[in-house]
Image 1: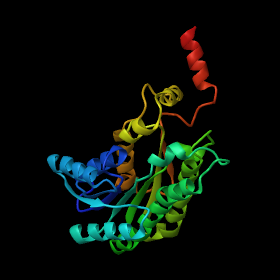
Image 2 (image 1 turned 30 degrees about the vertical axis):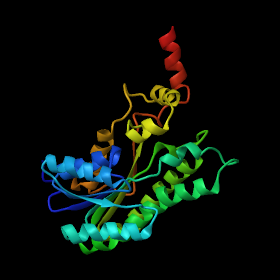
Image 3 (image 1 turned 180 degrees about the vertical axis):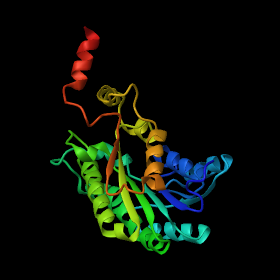
Length: 268
């Protein structure tokens, strides 16, 4: 346990597993009171149990971030239980619909609308309802989970990529609108991170392609993202705002020929 988030209250959405769970644990280890929010309440309660076992303070809260009333209730629960709100990690996304998120010509309107409602409108609503409490506290910090997919074209997952690009823009707008009032807003853009949701929804052959295109020895773990989230939410990042920080093992920084050249060199 450290004290860099002492007396701070944080909300982490999608904290029932994966990156959200790692983020919630990291913030709690820093002394924050953490509202562990997830549509999977059992997963959220498991995260709270882990945090309690590590000496932290946390509250499980059900939320469907596609529903504004549920987000209002989540924020109210944080304020009622812990007396205020200072930090927000918008992390939740609907990854189960990705398998139906193919190309524009075959895009189901339902898939597009659900993806935008959860991945983009949800974080906006989280910020909307968190801001009054952060402003009342004299300032706050927001980090939203974006993705490398929001920065380049791909052969599938059109709605997902567009929603994440929207998060990048939303981050800059929030940082600009509220910076003088003490609000910082940033985003993290992971590459491929080994989470339960990834294992359940991405075929092994596709995972192998991603592995070849990361320049690090292995692909990311949830804790790799959580440490950057915690840094951006902390006072150590007081002069950083409006930024999208790639935490992607080098996935987005190399030439398209990198992976084939590596494969060829290994075969020679």
